[in-house]
Image 1 (cartoon, rainbow, N blue to C red):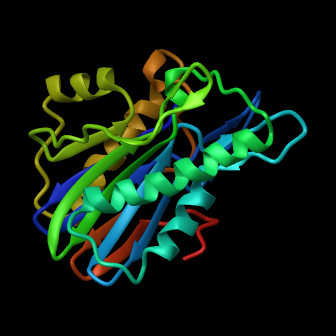
Image 2 (image 1 turned 180 degrees about the vertical axis):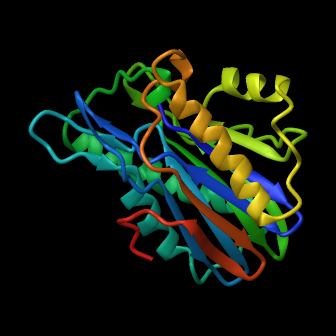
Amino acid sequence: MTAIVAVHTPEGYIIAADGRQMHGASFDDETVKLFHSSGRNSKVAWGCFGAVGLPFSGLDSFDLAEVSIAASKQMEYREFSSLEEYAMEMATAVYAVLSIYCLKHSAIICCSEEVFPGLAFVGYVNGKAELAQVEIRHRCGEWLPPSVAPLLLRPSGLAIATGSEVVYRALEKAEMLRTPKSLEEGAELARSYIQTCIENNETCDECKGIGGRIHIAAVTPNGFEWKIKPLFAKD
């Protein structure tokens, strides 16, 4: 399980993720799940969740992050009408690579729902603040074309791409979800939510696998900025 959330503030968006990726019985606590790009009329950050890697016997794994980064570089000189259009363009590229990869290796995918590949986006297209989410699912071993998934802002300004609803309801009941007035307050809201998921990863099924160091970034009309940068982030 992964925790990726977005927070809308008057100054811009916060996007945050936990740093844990499971490798069987072992894990990596500094996995980079957040990325960003700027285009002709867009400033976007996104988080990868679900099938961050799909290993097949004796073969290199499909890497959702690498494929999404490669797709974003092809989109830098294009203009988009909305963040949803940007998201679908990237997801379509991921879908094409994933389909070819599985066909090449004769791989039949039978994944449970929590490992469906997903991409959550925040940012600005034509100066407009937007958020979007896309997923790629499968049926009977065949990948289905990407589709838009809900990524709704809660009254507190928090949007959960993937994480625990149980934790959200507990924080809401405890009146700990205050609407942020700044990027700093938004970052603290995101950090508090993910940290609570981490603290409950042994007692709450929805939090299992969430862990590691929390990574946080901000996206404003002026661009992208790390608030808590992953140790192995390239920029």
